[in-house]
Length: 124
Image (cartoon, rainbow, N blue to C red; front, side, top):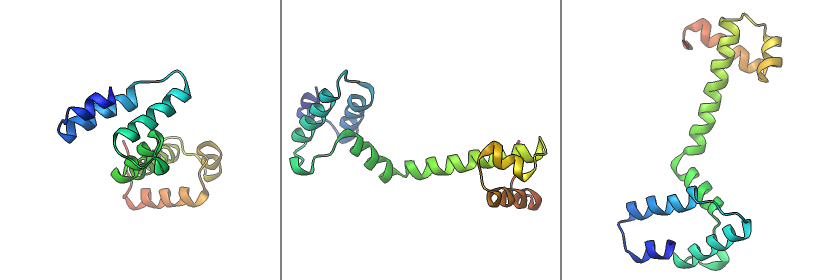
């Protein structure tokens, strides 16, 4: 199927969408089949076999290039800020209670408390 897609000489955007479908939505029962699929796609796309990239490598590389991982880190940090904010403002937890419950450092909690006090951090 990948060979047919590449042979069609589709616009790169369409080709990418279809190839993404193959990589992300089609699962293989055996890891050996997945490895062979990765190998064959690399051959079709004229990649050097010694420097062959697995789909996991390609996904990671794409995530790095698009800033996905950075955004994910920011999202986790914001989620923790929101959690700590709620523990402080809605439940009145002490720093030690928050450390035990939310698994964050006292330094992180103090930064959140300072942001709340200054009005720079407000969640609904």
